[in-house]
Image (tube, rainbow, N blue to C red; front, side):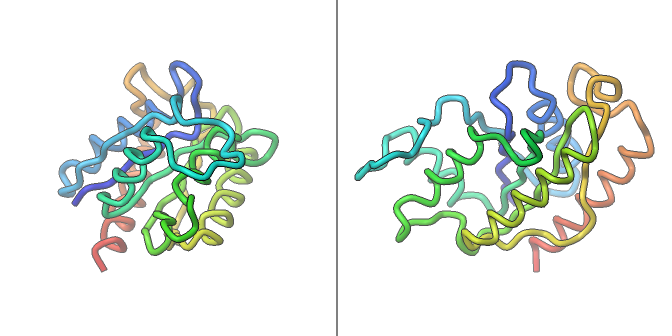
Length: 178
């Protein structure tokens, strides 16, 4: 099974990107290959375009080729970052080629505090459902205190959260297979 990991942050040394790389290691024994992509080069904003730039077309192909998509987003003003919103909008453009429609997805987040991440997850789930994505309704992964509990590779130093993450990912993989 092939999945695409999309970090919601364009910040260098992003906790969310590092966490997605670590999640990919957890998914491998479950038979899942997770490709973590960058959104840094995506054009912002969508604007009044009539054509899809080549970089967007390549990104859309990755979404189409994936069995599922995993987002890991920080919170920004109790929502998700504009860079992620712009990327999502590009993948849904034009409306007759909305690559999110019918795609299965999972939304999680990593931040310095939990309340913000949970609010960002809720907003992103709502937005993706509007675009036609089937969003996993099981337990969520909202990692707080990112600077304290992630190692250099994005792995968790907290065994309790690590076990929960593995359990939730196993449930997500089974849901995608249905």
